[in-house]
Image 1 (spheres, rainbow, N blue to C red):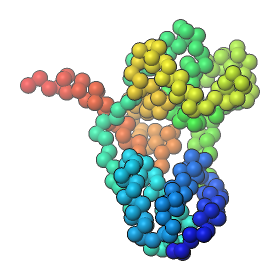
Image 2 (tube, rainbow, N blue to C red; image 1 turned 30 degrees about the vertical axis):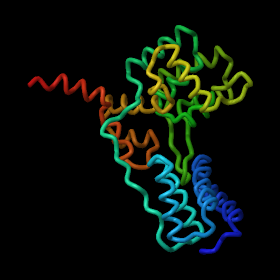
Image 3 (cartoon, one colour; image 1 turned 90 degrees about the vertical axis):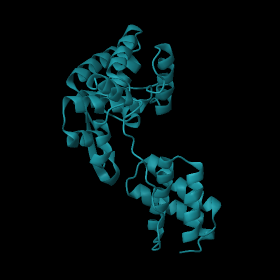
Image 4 (tube, helix red, strand yellow; image 1 turned 180 degrees about the horizontal axis):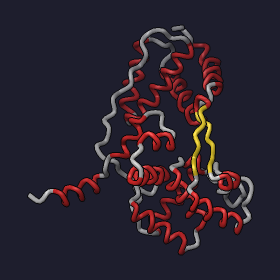
Length: 277
């Protein structure tokens, strides 16, 4: 399997089909195939030395999380072709001691108020849906009127697993009123002026505009911030970390445990309140 110089294109197509058959997400397929394509763009043969050289290249040019993403992709490719020699080891990533860049409860409530005052109902429900369900931005744009009627959305993830995103009753009622008023009782609910489903990048752009308009910290005005807000608020109201992990669709409880941590601002506030010596 070492000398595959003339078979890269065929192998990559087969690899993509292999990942598709495993029900991997489009983003995962794109990321993993990119890693293999990037490797062959630099090396003509798969050898242990070249694999380690690729790792060094990644370390010099990318952030740790991206490095591990590329390594995962390349290792998956090695498994696909039946490589039995040494794989590329992931690098250790230092976990943060606090959770940063999460919109505060106060700023979240303030943002909702301002959006309602300005009659920006579309984005009011975009951010409220993310913050009240923990849905990722890629999942949020997929919501349909039927999902709102049902009170949940079923998301199919890798391994044919199904995750159900529940819509709280109060939000469901408010959204149904909005959908009736705007005549969006079927199909996608978050659509642009051309009648097409809004993109994640479109929402990211609007959040930056809102940050400037309403004088909010631009670092917390990103889609995942509202998913974080859901998790932080959920932990505050319910200490069932296992349930939260299921709701967020995490593969490991360790991933969810970050929400038990405080932000640096919260840590500072607690220290100021507790330490009086």
